[in-house]
Amino acid sequence: MKNELTCDVVEDLLPSYVENLTNTVTNEAILAHVEQCENCREKLERAKTTDLQGQVTENREIDYLKKTKKGYQKKVMLGVILTGILFLIAIFIRISLVSTPVENASLLDFDMNISEEECFINFYGNFIDSSKGIAKISYKMEDGVLYISVRQTMTPIFYKNAGEKHISYKGKLKQIRVLDRIVWDHGEWILPEVAKIYATKHLYIGSKEDMEASFGVLGLSEKLGDYTIELHTSGEPYGMTLYLKEKYSKENADRMKLWMERYASATIALTDNMNYMEFVYDIDGKQEKFTFTEQQADSMVGQSVKKMADNAASFQKLMGILEFVPGAALYD
Image (cartoon, rainbow, N blue to C red; front, side):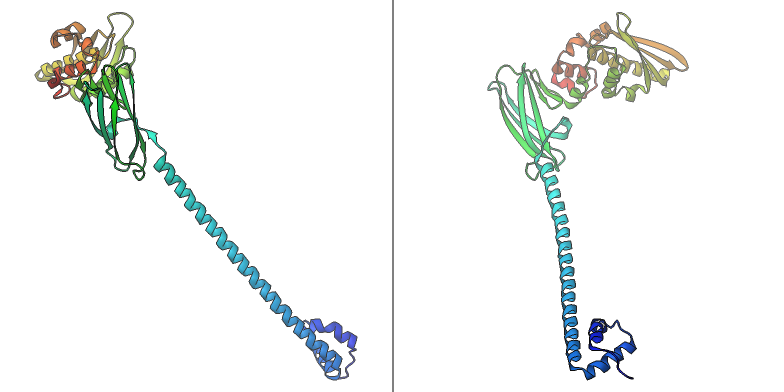
């Protein structure tokens, strides 16, 4: 085959030839030409060398980009992990160090020593739930009432589960309250059950919710069954009717009437302007009505039930007399 390619044509074709972009006929023509032309042969060798270096450089660039991308991905992943760790640490520190007030005394197991002569109190307390810590115990004195408050954390790592406070006060001590509970009143320790009942004391008979709160802690439905309430507040004397849904027999009527007297006495004592309590119930299919007044309550107890509710200490004695809280009468 006659080679008709000129050096200029071969030189133009060399880059394509080196990259394998030319066809077989052209390749044969180029090879035939470079065999006869030393100048074009040298150019072909240089083109091959340049192409090889370019491939090496390109491969290096690709490898560099891959390494750079991989390194960037590692940095991003590391940043995400560190951010997550810092977030968890921040939450842990907040839970551990930030304190919140405790509202309910039933969450604590506490005790105290009182010296009225030295006006000094030692208070000791710890959480029943060991996962909580006592951050701070503080107190204030107002009108003879000492208020003790506690702040908590959700973990005892930085704060202990237990704490104590040495309290000095001035003036006459009338009452001690730990959070929401009266624990000491007029020289008497107050039982938790009594404090819970006394906390429902209210001024007026106008609210069914107030009455039901007292009935709830007194356990009225446990003794007398379900009921509905009707209040009588249009004029004095103020009172209420309790419609009992339980059907009684003559055999247990006297026992139920005794509990009616006790509940009426306690309710009248806890409600400042209440004068009587009426019960409507069924005995052997016949509707009965029983009314118990403030005067009858005073006569049964031997003193004014309303005056006994003036403070928690005397109210505790009333609860003992009425047998609502076993052992309360021992404080008399």
